[in-house]
Length: 288
Image 1 (cartoon, helix red, strand yellow):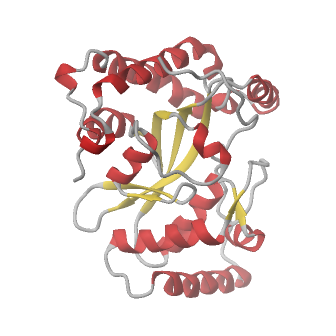
Image 2 (image 1 turned 60 degrees about the horizontal axis):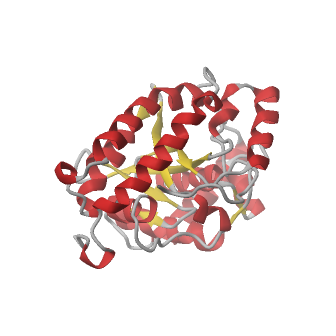
């Protein structure tokens, strides 16, 4: 069983916001030109989609400062002028830069298990009263996080990229976010509190598209070396993840208070902790 009752950050890491698109203006055209120049400078001679993403993610992680959420709406240009932002803002900057070099992207909103924090619970409850159930994506033992997926130019696959944690690609993402060994996470303190994602949704024009099954059920076992047929806790983990998914989606859409599913969050934390016994030692885990 994983121990989750320790002090943690008291606010959301980066609740996803939807910024309305303003009509083009002369100033907007000038700002677009600046983004074009920035994109060319950062990407350089990279030609493949993943290489472009790697360069932009590395640049964003090094040059933009991560900050706590302040619930303000900003344009990409304002985020750049500010020199940083929360995880959602960093993802939007990366998406804007990649768009200029022909890489198709989409934002991803997740909910992850966190160490217990009564302060974070109180903060979330206040936000729920103010703005509604969509603010329940963070609470006593869970928090939200935003990153992006990019389209692989050589296939129909969508792959993960996280500028906050400096992660690109499925294997790198799963090892850092789901793995049981040492995790190459960001130096920011809250990143060490992201025990494991339990609900993952791509934000698309058609609405939220679940990516939970893809990452946590289909991809994770092979990357981590877990033999699902011989892992007694695997069935419970997958059943809980699948049952939690619609609740998480409803909360993101502002239709359901996720705090009502607190018992399930605790069960997910326990189920993930039980999987540790099924994973090989890090030195024996698959490397390719």
